[in-house]
Length: 264
Image (cartoon, rainbow, N blue to C red):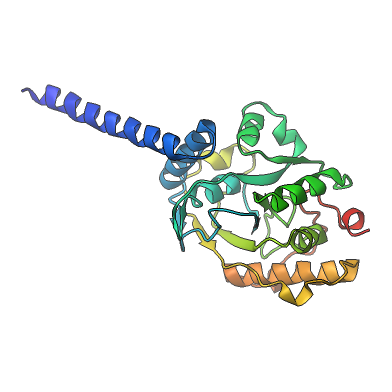
């Protein structure tokens, strides 16, 4: 057999193995085939382009509800989190991470399709609509995983922006475990597209569930929600090994969950 034929045969075997892996994952996955394919593409992309390194296996539960909180440095953050979430401590298990996402992204072409596959919760940027918070609460109580970037928009400065008290409200009202994840070195560029093809080395650090038992059963007043939100922020900073003293002060309204609305 000639070298050319050997090369063709070898590539064909690799291709068949790849197809077999994809089909096996889709058949075993309890989610839609579109989501399984999206996960595989995310794994390939984050390992190749972003050199993703995962500090610990994902602690998210394979069953039951959970609230996922992450810092927000780049448009690629949801992809980084998704691709690191498959290998859990109790084995491989894919679950949809339903991020609260600005409505304009949920309605924009291919990004809108991706948001649909991820079952994203559309929110208005002004955060004055109570609807998305109620949707998130229902999904959490129904045993699903809802993801929020509690800083609100992308933080291009140092530290962590203030967390919106609405995140504290969801954590306390839903009574589900709250899992933090911290992203280091996600690419930041001038457009929303450029970071997706910017080569870099990113690190993902998953944290243990946050203990909120000290506030269990208390009335969610604005003062209490602010206290819990700051507690979550400090916990996130500790997970990421950063100092909150470096944070630039600015008004951050997280994920369309408005504290003056949901705390009333």
